[in-house]
Length: 397
Image 1 (cartoon, rainbow, N blue to C red):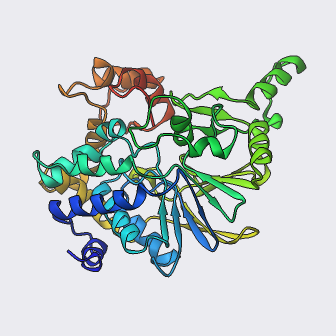
Image 2 (image 1 turned 60 degrees about the vertical axis):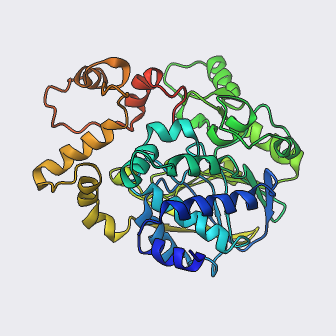
C-alpha cells in the first residue's frame, strides 16, 4: 500500500491491515538503524510532548500547528498508552516519518517499552483491535528499540524525553549507548527517558526548619536524587548548569511530566517541559501545548485544549472498544473508572497488590470509600505510590 494512501486512511482514523503495519515497521527500522543516538536538526521546528494515544488531540495539534511537511516536527516520545487510540497515533507517526523523513523526528519515551505497554493499555488495545493471534504489538514494540534517544537543535538546544543522568556528563556518552534493546531498569538509557527536573523554591520553606536544615535540603535538591517514580532521578539547577556548560548547550527541552497549563519552565528557562496531551486520560482537565521554535532565540508556546471530538465520542468509544454495548449517561463515568482500573489488574483478574480494590481505596482516603460510585483518581500520586511496588512492572510511569 502506498504511503499517501496509508496517510489518507490514518487521518480518517482507520486502521491499517496487519501486513501493511509489518512492512511499515520493517522499512522504518531500516531507516532508523542508520541514525545516531543523538540527531541534529535545525530551526524552524515545532516540539511536541507526550501524546499518549489521544489521536483526536493529535489531529487537533496538526490543525493548529500545521500538517507535515508544511511544518517540521520533533516529537519527544510517549506516543502510546493511557489514551484509547494508541494504535492509530503511532501508525500515523510511523507513516509520516517514512513519507517525510527530514520533516519529522521521533524520540523514544519511557512508554516506548514492552514492559510498560503491557500494563498501561497499548498491549490490550492491539489485541482488541487486531485479535489475540495478532503480532501487531510485537512488531511495533520491536520498532521502539530503534527510536533515537535525544536531539540537538541548532547546535545549542538539547532535547530528550525525560532528563539527565549521573551516568552522562557529555553528549558523546549518549552516542555510545546501545539503544537497540528494551529500556533497562537503570543506567544512562533509563535515566534519559525517566528523570525529572526538581526546582527547590526557597520561598516555600517549611515551617519549623532551621537555617542548617533548610540549607541542607536546598543543597541536596540541587543534585541527583533517587526519583519517586522508581526509575531515573530528579535533578536540580546545578546539575543542569554543569551539563549545559560542559556540552556548550544553551537549554534543555523535555516532556514526561503533566503540566496543567501545557508547559512548565524551570531554572529561569534552562529547562522547559512541553506537554501535548490535553485533558490527559480524558479526565485531568489540563491544557496542552506545542513549542514553535522559529530560531534559537524566538519561540512561541501554542496552547490548545482537547479536540471537540473527544467531548462527543469518548464515552461511546470507550464502550465500543471495551464492552461493545451502549452506555447510559448514569453508567458512563462508572464504566470509565472500571476501564481505567483494569489497567491495574494482574492476569488473574485481581487488582494490584492482591487486595480488594475497596481496601486500597480506603487507604487512600481519610474517610474511606464505602460508596463505590465515588470517583477514584488511579493516576494520582497517592494511588500510584500505594500500588506501584506491587505491580508486575518493576518501575512506574
